[in-house]
Length: 70
Image 1 (tube, rainbow, N blue to C red):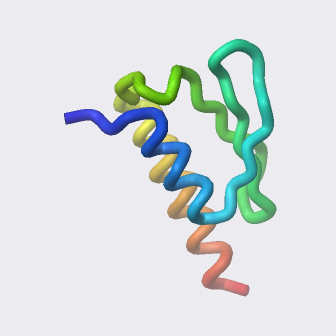
Image 2: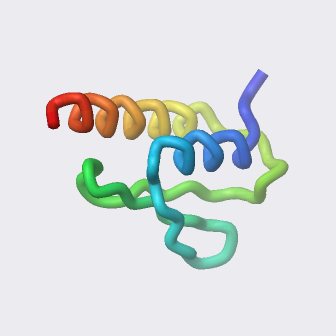
Image 3: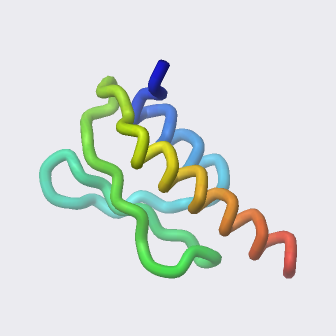
């Protein structure tokens, strides 16, 4: 069962990502240990697409590994 967009956003907030408003239902997420930005599209109650879940998990892993190195 796919996660909801709100759950992905909650995970990002918990690890320290900051939400930057985008256009329409898009939100951009930045973190000092993440190069570039992560874009999540969709309303809070929508099911997340597999590529969105994968992107969020990869971003979290990248931040955790860089945070651990410091």
